[in-house]
Length: 293
Image (tube, rainbow, N blue to C red):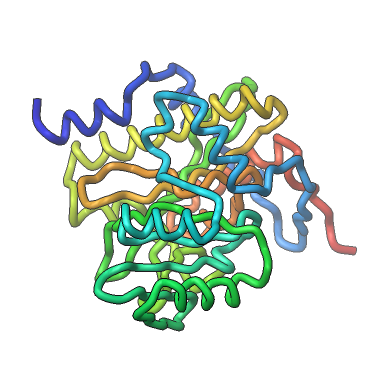
C-alpha cells in the first residue's frame, strides 16, 4: 500500500455514511437574502471552553489521534511541552478570531510571537514571566505546535463546515482554506487571514484524483466529529472544525467551533457553497431575516 493510501486509510478509519454527500446539490440561490434584507444572528447554544471541547474529542479512540497534545497552562506543563514538542501554542481557553494566541518555539533560545511582535529569551523563567504578563490573567491552554503546510511561504489551515440538513442528519456542507498574514501566526479572516479555495492551496502537494480523495476524506472526518459531538451535545445543528495539515499531510484538529461563521464562504468566487451553507444555517434557526423599513 502506498503512503498516500495509508494516509487516506488513517483518516477514513470508520465506514463512510450515505448521508455525507447525499444532499450536495440541495441549495437554492433564490433563498439568498434579497437586496435591502438584513440577517440578524439568532444566538444558539454554544460551548466556549477549548479545554471542554478537547476533552469531548479525546473520549473517542478513533478521533483522539487527530488531536494535538493539549494541557492546562502552567509553568510545569509549559516546560514539559516545549521540551517534548519544541513548538507550542499558548491559547486562551475562551477566545475567538485568533485573539490572544501566542506561539512559543524552543531552540537555542526561547522565541515568543503574538500578532506581529516577536521576542527572544535566553532563560525559561524570563519567557514564563513574559507570558504571564501577556496573557492578562485569563485561563490558558498549551497546545502542541503543528508545522503547517504553506502557500507562498504563508501557513494555512482548513475550515470544514458540518450542518444538519432537511432530513435532520449531519452533512458536510463547506470547506475552505485560510492563509495567514505573512507576519502573523493565525489564519482567522478577522485577524488579517485570507480565505482561499482549498483546491488551490493543496495543489502544491496533491494533484487530480489524489487531491479530491484527500478533500473528501477531510469532509468525512468532519462529519465523524460532528456525529461524535452530538453524543455530548444533542442540540447542536452546526459544527465548524479547523484542521491543520502537517508536512506528512496528516490532519490535526486545531479547534472545534460550535457557532461557526457561515460568511467566510462568501469570500469564495464561486458562491454555490456559500448559498448552501447559509440556507442550512437559516433552516436550522441560526438567523432571522428582517427587512429594512
